[in-house]
Amino acid sequence: MAATPTFVIVGANLAGGRAAEALRKEGFGGRVVLIGAEPDPPYERPPLSKEYLRGEEERDKLFILPQQFYPENDVDLRLGTAATALDVRERTVELDKGVPVKYDKLLIATGGRVRRLAVPGSDLEGVYYLRTVADSERIAAEMAPGRRLVVAGAGFIGAEVAASARVKGLEVAVVEMETVPLKHALGEEVGRVYADIHRDQGVDLRLGEPVARFEGSRRVERVVCASGDAIDCDFVVVGVGIEPETSLAEAAGIEVGNGIVVNEYCETSVPDVYAAGDVANHYNALLGERLRVEHWQNAQNQGAAAAVSMLRRETFAEVPWFWSDQYDLNMQYAGYASTWDEVVFRGSVEERRFTAFYLRDGRIRAAMAIGRARDIRPARELIGRGVGVGAAALRDEEVDLRSLVPD
Image (cartoon, rainbow, N blue to C red):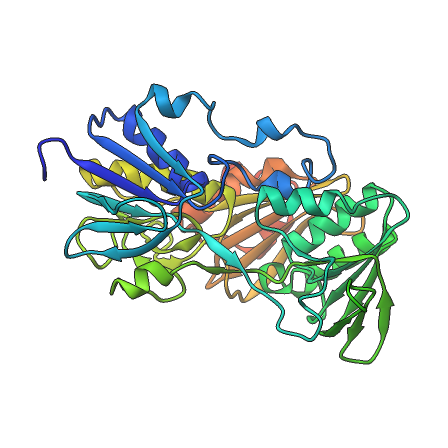
């Protein structure tokens, strides 16, 4: 490594920003270059579908660090600059502006890009996707009471946008191709709870209804479902997930597969190249499996952990955790369950104060709590330790979850 090494971070987002911060906190004295295609410095995305979208949070509150952090800590922040190619032999990052940047170590934190609906009319004005601050601001400008919004997709982004729009007094219809909202993340049983929540709030929820096309002369005027049903609207928000932005890595010959493949140290298949955040498919030694997590906690903590590993190779292994606010309900989720054998409920589903435990092979793989945030901490402990827990003990509210955690 050079006497004065250069560490380059591609992706001036939450993961990339926390990585730059961690390098300086850990005493790294070399050059740090943080490259971001967006015009804004690293910011948090969760408020974009909630508080910021509703006009309840100031723009400056989104940024993860004070603006002066970067010059004061000698971080070369390059905004509005896209990385166009990586040369891992020459250790250079090609840019769309300026000369290539040489690196001694490289962190790829390119995040994800929105998955687009390839249906007729998708290029009409008034059809929006939500990923960036600018996206949120464009949607917010449309959100006047009484206007008609159709949300395509009832995943977390779609559900949160729908809830925010109802709070703002809009008429909202949600079109979802699955039989319940949030099916892939939470399953049928919990998905039905969320369907009832949105319907109780006046959302016209159309389930099992793929979008066939958008119609309008210049601007979208209606959404036509595969069944032939047409829903008139003033604008549309599409929320059908994201895809990991792996194009740079793939072109450079770095191993990819549902993201950029990294080990427990956030290392890719190429020496001195790391990846973190939404784009990283990492091996979690704590859970004993590979996972790619698209949530705030993972981006923040894995970005910082990757920076530390660039300095002294430390393992990153956490039990994932995230939250979603919809109307006056707060949902918290811990763990990772792509499959499960059984869902066990603790509390009252009818009163919407319960925790659902997702069990596989007699162990908790994930837990989702509505109105019972206190259950999440012991649940994370049980998940992380791989403790076998019986369904009866989880159901029984007389059993303190903390007592199930071994000393």
